[in-house]
Length: 168
Image (cartoon, rainbow, N blue to C red):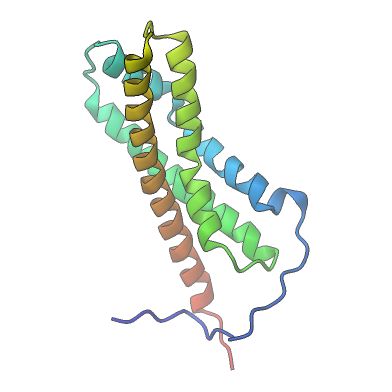
């Protein structure tokens, strides 16, 4: 079925009024990833320890629970961000929703840098390249997943609120 927007769209783009400082993308995108990262950062220690320090990890059900909490929190945060943008009459919400969800992976990478410096005893070029290469791939995948969940949640929200709008 072809894409049908919930309301009629004008061909002329509307001018966006000036926004408050906290609604600019340079502020709202990094803040959008902070709360989802806060929901997983304790579990990140155990995951990194089991992966890089060769410890056994037995609590796989808890990881699934934490991952599902991450997805729900990411979706909720991007819906709130989209609501604030639409309230400020800014219709350019899709990339902001994706990037605010994906910014969680930046915090995970920063935590990985902290973990490398403070907790591991790795040294040498090959170990460092292997660690950061694997971590970068993990963070890219996490960024795509969280960004997609954020975008899809915000899209469902926008379609839901504009479905009831009657336009002539």
